Image (cartoon, rainbow, N blue to C red; front, side):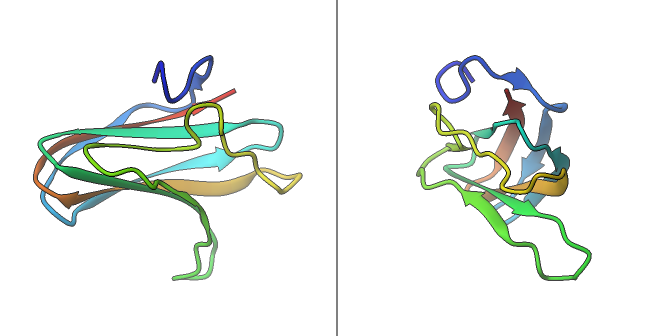
Length: 115
């Protein structure tokens, strides 16, 4: 958090789970205008952690991507190092982030930050 989300506050509780390869964990939040968001995930055991942020829509299967990490390894972030994501909409929208164990097994924890 000190390097990926400096000066940001925790937006919601930390989510964590014990993952096998391919398993996912989702957490929903309100994507608020005027705020800037970063999500960070780190694994202990998994060798590749993936994270994606999506809008939540009432249409099944239609959840447009807001961002996806491009890092390799047991740590992933979206909007890190001062490149936080800002909503385009002037109204609050429902969103979620999805954490996935791409390879390996073990614990993964993720935290959403905002400012």
